[in-house]
Length: 505
Figure 1 (cartoon, one colour):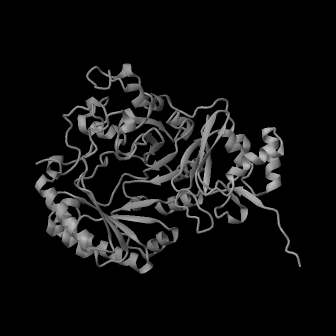
Figure 2 (tube, rainbow, N blue to C red):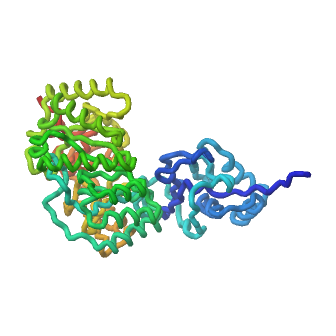
Figure 3 (cartoon, rainbow, N blue to C red):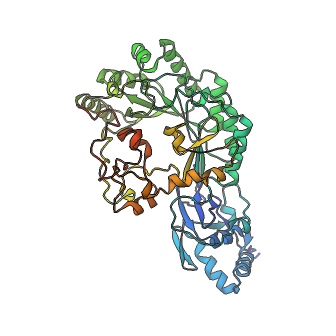
């Protein structure tokens, strides 16, 4: 009997998302998606494409037989079927990124943008051609035009511990938004096809509605990301809930020595007992966590680090350990000079951790003693700054507990950087507020003569590419010099104050 041949059915690969941005469209990969062996995808992908391509892909947001897909593209582009097939074919069976050109605009695509319908492994989104309408094309502007790409939410700025090195603003006690408003904000993010909605703190488990928050994020298809805490979760129901959600926990533990715990974290010895109980619960349900440790002169000795290491070794639930020195804070209650390690102390700490890394094969230990090597190195403006690109007001907003929106989580309620209020505005309105745009596109005439940026020949090029860490500027040069260069710039003044532990003698 002759085998029946079925027509090929194809569909847009919903491991990628199309997000319109008024004058261009972004295509990006979903967070935490694996292809499970069915089809390859490009992780962490994001590029701008011509909106016409987004319209064409929208026509394939649901499976179509090849011939029907060709007809749809031909009708939309007002061309014949042969021409439409020639345009569609390169998107199929493409196991590497590629580019395509329309109306003089080059668009970059990830691999496997269109796939066989039976290989689709992500719930399908419904796209309408009309949502990608545009009146002009702008592929050059770096800052997102219509809405941010990512959103970070601080549910509460409260915490379980009272760490002496804490960078958070613990002086402000805001009135928290009603959770119903938080829900509507998350839903708005979903409708805007925001890339990620992440949580920061304070401590997530201090927030009264943390379970409801995680459920709402899941319902709107946002990855829960990394939940950072210093709160020992002692309720086994909570631990089972976290396991079921697939949440990834980062527990911050700086010491197991009672006296250090009191002086560094402001916590009694019973806190450490609760931590051990919490880790035991994690082990019972098979919940893997990562550990984070901040080092100061109180806990950076070889003896202290080895004690903490021997403690960690008891728990198989801990699969990674990140150690770092404390950063300078804009809100510290303690003189930063008392938190810095001398170069000798830093060298001894570095030696102790490196010794542990040589003998430890299962626990992934992360540590970098050289934390100022990228300063004063950029010679060609912000594009040449090393390290992570600053996303503040370029692609990201930070929602504070009371609904105020700032450009960076470390700026908190500093009025100069508050760009809106989500208790009375939408995300789109905040992103396009006059103050947000003034901060995003600064004018040379607004800079003081004392600022090296004022007469810099790279000014226009440098500020057209948003990558200026205003927090480091404020930490390094003070609030009165907020128009100074990012310390990563080679033209930045050399009288930069110490920003991190371990840089003084």
